[in-house]
Length: 242
Image (cartoon, rainbow, N blue to C red; front, side, top):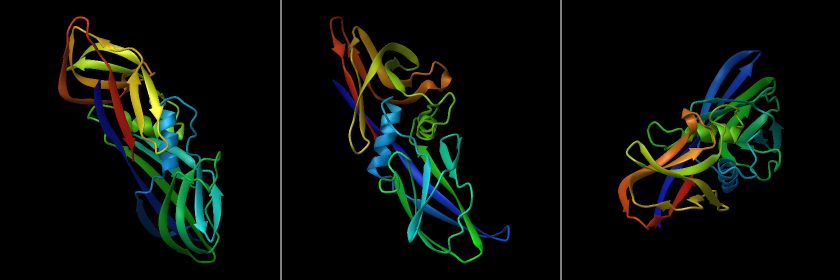
């Protein structure tokens, strides 16, 4: 059994804008590192083609919690959520959260602490950005995470489907992937059938169910495995989110 692991990093940003009579008065930025286990778990389920729930709500805490449905877009490896109508409730906003309508504000995907004072007559809007990094150069893991998490239809909105072993850029064998997702969002990728020898490979690649060039999620390398006739190799990869 060949075991490996890698991590997809997640950063979150809030850009808050205060308007007075249609004129932008101030802009504040807040960086979060607050992805909760719920958010990681739902993303892992979406990546592995299981029942998962995309992010589709913004929650702003100003004493009580105000829920809005965002306008969503993806640029490369970044998923952006824009408030539609502005916030007009005066007070001090203490947290911005995102999550799913399936769970509500009591079980959000993240919670970014902010301190924004909105005076009567002013308006407030937000852009929340989820940024996914850490995939190997030339691979699409970050773009696929952003597309799956936001249900951004297109060539990156496909779940993982197979595991392949390569020698350099030459594919040696490919098998259907199997998955196990933990409650904290870490998941394991294996395959039901082993890779039969004789063979030599030096990297393992994870591929979505898309058939286009965008299908390559990520890879693990830095090793060489040689098998002989009658030998079989099983691989198990741990993927961490966050």
